[in-house]
Amino acid sequence: MNQAELQILVKKISRDCFGLPFQHQAVFNNRLLTTGGRYHLKSHNLDFNPKILEVFGADEFLGVIKHELCHYHLHLSGEGFQHKDKEFKQLLIKVGGSRFVKSLNKNVKPVKKRMLYQCQSCSQFIYRQRKVNTQKYVCGQCKGKLMYIETQE
Image 1 (spheres, rainbow, N blue to C red):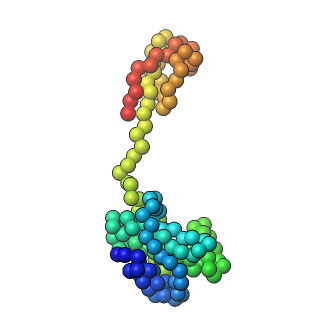
Image 2 (image 1 turned 90 degrees about the vertical axis):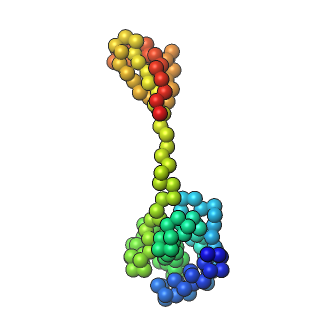
Image 3 (image 1 turned 30 degrees about the vertical axis):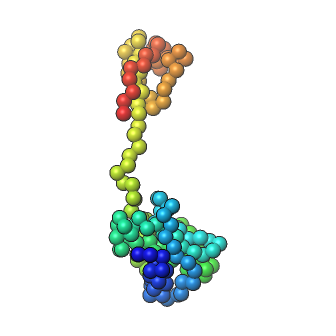
């Protein structure tokens, strides 16, 4: 789908689902990483993430278009257009738009490192996410000296 086809599709959905014309620009924006689309308050233009169409297909993308058109039409009519507003939630349910877009990076998990220390007096194991200055800090139970063991991932 190219920019011209996107513009025609957005105009058609606006006319069919909302009964109102879409009179601004709808474009693909490759820089959108975590969102499906964006509504610009000043210019009233819409940006869409092309990866949503590629990865999840037309049904999910239509939900994103309806979501952004809810922002568009409510803002132009002077009603509550934010996600928290009652009017927005009601219109979104009425037209069948998606509330949230599926995550594009679902398999990426941040790696948490854990530093393992052991008390030299009571042999207590202590796990920390950050390094501890063993010259300055001591065991919380017996006030013994700490020794660095290893970093676990």
